[in-house]
Image 1 (spheres, rainbow, N blue to C red):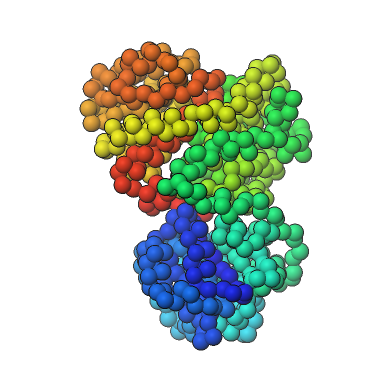
Image 2: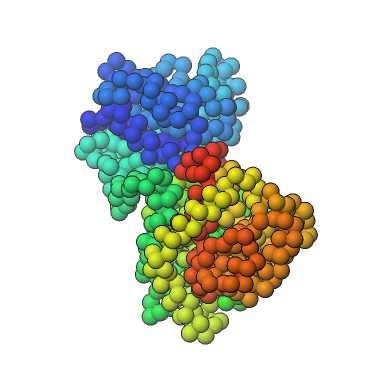
Length: 607
């Protein structure tokens, strides 16, 4: 969840390191720091708070040329956010600096042993033990010292190490947390993801668990834990640096919502053939997909809501038994899985710790794993039997927007593909045709959707509570709408199946507790209208998101947002930008930054 940047060689300055670190702010953090090597030696500067605070501490040093440097944003797991607990951490000599993303599970016993041997600690973090262990093992060879240190560590890590006596290299290691490395004749580079590197190179190596690396100008050397070299081809990144910038929008979140038409095109391109779904990525699985006994979907957060839509679609159209579980719960269940079972793992980053452990457990039981992710070379993609990339491009805003839309589009096509053996191809072809036309639909409605949502946000932003309700395919939309509102506007919002209102939640409703009803033109519309009347009878205001020109709904509610008419399974997709825009404008009206919601991180790489 932390952000790591490292550079060595070339015309490196402190400013370049800080600028690169800013491109990882979306991951969420509470402190920042930098270690750099000048001709005078190794120096560390760090502080609690945002990168702006760190930059003010650096002052006129920003233009200073350095031989090597590492920068870090920390999201606290061990020890409160503070100057002392911020990374990088150093050893007793002050010659070794370490940055780390992950959790060292046995740090307490390691620290006790190190302190008994005379080491003095300056922080309460788990990371600092790494610096002192490297100090203990160092005999002039930094990579050997790191190798021996890794043997002592239990847990997850992406580690970067600098040593004052080795100003031409940075050494790195990875187990369970992402790390990307690369080199050009202009320098050597590492980062938690590719975003900070796009300015400098396109060919990168995604480090794998158990790998170490020596990074220097001109090349990177990848090693196994035993020190033997490992040869692997680089991955070419096609994203442009501009794709990671705001492009004139006030926030990344708004920019990324407006990118959704193109995101949809990218997600479905190459996956429709002769008007039917086609996934070349799944061809190698052969009969495993034609003889499925059951499907289990694993996901967290927004990805879980996309999975709920897929679960219902597969059961409705393919007649396949499907379950869905939050990955953090699945890890500790004894669900019987084996031959004939397929697990669909959904993770935007491809590094979500709970989902990763879930697929490892599933594969051990004999199930096949198909993963959906946005990140090429991510751990989940490498540890699955097949991987489907959603091709959404970089998403900087912490709250998932365009990645959710891409997930839904790909999952609906995947469900349609599984349904081909069960349904008349004409039914599937009609749905696929609708999906293929949705990018154009999104383009035509986004401006008016933005206007509608901004108007409603001005009306409702001062409320402290909200309830979202839906039925059928609209229930996942209720959950996702509530999640978006609470994570960026800090309004308490809950999502419920509308039929559950009278079993408890309706007790909350009054004139200060509005309801957001998801009520498209589908077979459950009449039931939803009844539920809306129940809420109105409690004097609660009702905002509805409904199909265009629906007079029944307009008469029953206080305010409404209208969306284009589509087939029932596609409403969660069509409604997504409206729910996102409403939450966005409420957050802005309340004076919050929707790109950086408090306490949250983009990529959750710890349990």
